[in-house]
Every structure is written in C-alpha cells, then in structure tokens.
Image (cartoon, rainbow, N blue to C red; front, side, top):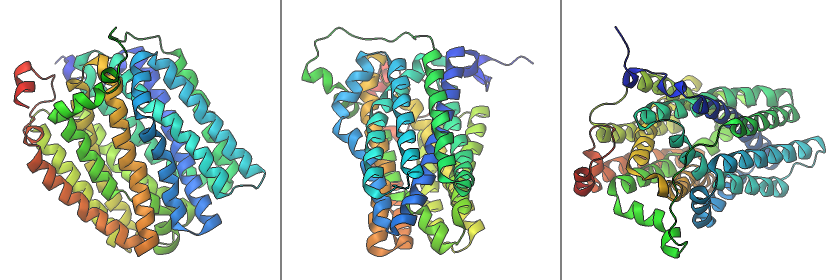
Length: 417
C-alpha cells in the first residue's frame, strides 16, 4: 500500500532546507537547556535565594516585551534566515561570557543577569524570525507535520539537554558551558547554510498601522487570540521549571543529576506525544483536544507540587509535557494557517511575547511566590490556576473550541470565527 504525502510522517524532511533548520533548532535548544540547568543550579548554590531564580526568568522576558514593536517589524522586513543566524551567534557569545565568569571564579548574580538580559534580547529577535521562517521552508500541506517535528526537536533537546547539563555540570561548570558554546556555533552555521527562502513582503508605508498590524490581526481573529492567550495564562500559572533546583536539592534531595532528570521529564512526555501526533495527526475536534491538553498540564503540575516521591514527581512532569505538547501542536498549527505570510513576523512577535510571558514570566511568578510562601504552595496554586484557565477559555472562546480540522480556514470559517 502506498503512503500519501499527507500520511507521511517524514514529509517535512523531504525538503533539505527544513532538515537543516530542524538540526539547527535542535542544537540551539540543546545548548539552551544546558545553560538553563547550569545557571539555575549555580546561581542557587551561590545565593541560596529563590528570588534570583525568579529574576532569571524576568530578565529574559522583559526584552521581548519592550521590543515587541521592533522585533516583528524586523522579521517581516528583513531576511529571516540571516536574523536567526545572527541571533544564534549572539547566543554563542553569551555562552562564552558565562564560561569566562566560571573560569575566572567571578560568577555572581549581577554579571550573570546582565548576560541573561542580552540573551533575552537575542531571543526577542529570534523568536518571531524563527517562527516565521519555518512556514517558508515547507509547502502548506506539510505544515502540520513540520510543526510536530519542530516541537519534537525542542522536546528531544529538553530530554537530553537537562540530563546532559546535569552530568556535564557534575564534571565541571566550564565543561557544560563549553559544550553549549560549541552547539550554538554549530546551529548558527547550519542556519546560514539554508538557501534564502521565498518571503512575502508588502510595500505599504511603514506607518504605526503597519507596525501595529500584528496586534490588530490578533484582536480581529478570535481563534488566534484565544490560542495565544490560552498558552499565556496556562503556563504563566502552571510553570514550575524555575523551582526545580529547590525541589531537587531540598524536597526530593536528588542533586545536580536529579535536577537534570526533573528538567528532562516534561520533554520525555512531550516527545512521546509528538511522535504519536506525527504518526497519528489530529484530524477532528482539534480545539477540544487542545483544551484537554491544557487541563492535563494543570493536573500534572498539581501532582508534582504535592509529591514527595521522586518517581511520582518525574511521572507527573512527563504527563505535564504530554499535555503541553497537544496544546503546542494545535496552537502553532492554527496560528500558521490563520496568519498571512506578509504579517506573520509581527503576529509571531506578539506570540513570542506571550510565549515568553508564559515561560520566563511564569518562572518569575513561581520564584517570587516560592520566596514569599514556599515552593510547594507556589506550584500547587499554579496547577489549580491552570485548570481554571482551561475551563474559562473553553467558555470564552467558543470559536476556538469548535475548531475541527487543522486546515487553512475558508473565508466563511473566518467570518464565523
């Protein structure tokens, strides 16, 4: 029996540019995970203060918020491939700076937070560019497949990266940062090798209306607004990544390698779900399944916060990752299908801020709450909040809940939404 293109789980890899992009994204995500584990453990070891764990997320999120009007414009107006390659080069410089601080034994909160702020600026520009570049590398019929593999690339790095980071950090912090540096350089070179893809632009005057077009589009398209804001509030409340050094060192008593295992567990669940979705893509009731995924993420967060046993905590984190993968798969596909390419960079700039808020600002929320109330209450309250968000958004965005298939919308479907 022949396999149609729609049923080909490797459809996206039939395109060389996408293959290069996939490998580069994996290397960059792997390096980011190593840096995240190493910086989190090292800063907590130096300060013993959860407030600094929250500050790590805050300084990485603020650049995306402050530069939101600039980053989307740049992604729509300039070569997206070049932007991504330059940003990855800046990431390599940041990894080199952390390595130098470690080798000179000057690792302390202030210089580290400055470096992570620069890292945040780079990510603010790379986010909309990389999200807008991906749909330019494959035809529309392979978009859903490419997004499943995009997520699996990041999630695979989220499995291997934290464990590798824990192991490498156990050998020496300088070793961890050196590997991250090499991977960032490799990712930048691979992106540079991608042939310049077609990119639709428009010649309209660069007015405030042009700059704000991403906001205007999202506010008009309720499906896109609902999908983006759902992720924002769900992960903002349910994020527990920043507190894992506390759980690993004080609650579960696992050490650096155990921290790597905790950080890897959501990726294990997510990659398993990503492989399932690449093989058996969602074909019906996509909106409902996205809300179910968010609810599962909230339940996993709640169980993780209450658990005092390592295996149960790791299992709960894996369930969180699987639930989040369903939400990411549906959300990113919907945003790509519902957004015209000429405004995609500006829309993805807004999306990047929402994603950054849900991740980095979620870490800030968790760190500050842990400092004020304790790590366990911070996670438990977040899990309950995520469940509440999934229920509320299902009621407030009926057009999103009623999405059936992951296909480009017809004019009638846009009008009904």
